[in-house]
Image (cartoon, rainbow, N blue to C red; front, side):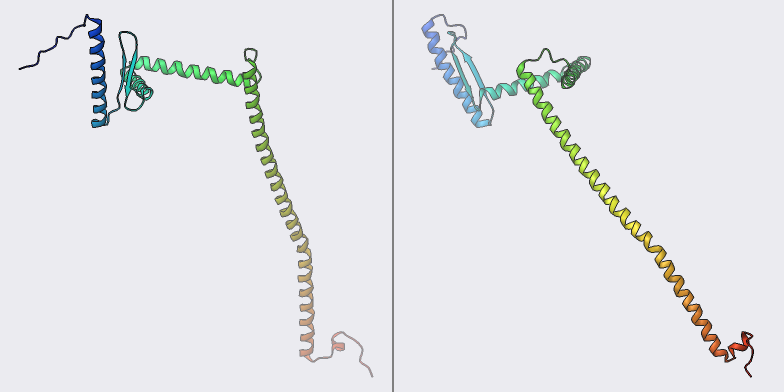
Length: 207
């Protein structure tokens, strides 16, 4: 005996409608769970009854599935977006970012502060304090580097000065050694010659 095919249309009887809704909802959620388990699919179901009662099922998290759906919708929209519109949207986004950054810079310079709340002014003050601390730290580092460089140059100049002071002494020592060598050579030549030094010098002979 074949099973009678049920005609798909709205059930007029309210009690029968509620019973059918409960059975079909459970069966739908069971099929979704089986599909998720068998195929490792990420599934989310949201159902509102005729009495506005919420029923939901998710293999992981309803919120996560909705976020994934939104991301896919955004990517799909960008893929089918005309190039002109895409460029226009990009330009508008960049223009807004530039305006925001320009406004922030003006506030950091102490301008356009009248529209800020007390909390916003306190946050701006904290940002400026952190920036000032960073600037001071870098300045101190540069200052210590300059001092170190100047000290190193001072040591180099002192060493160079000491070297320059030693140059005349070495020259005088060399000249003295050269003179002594000349005198020694002259004495040696006189002794080798064996002649009377007095005759060579033109002194009178003693009788």
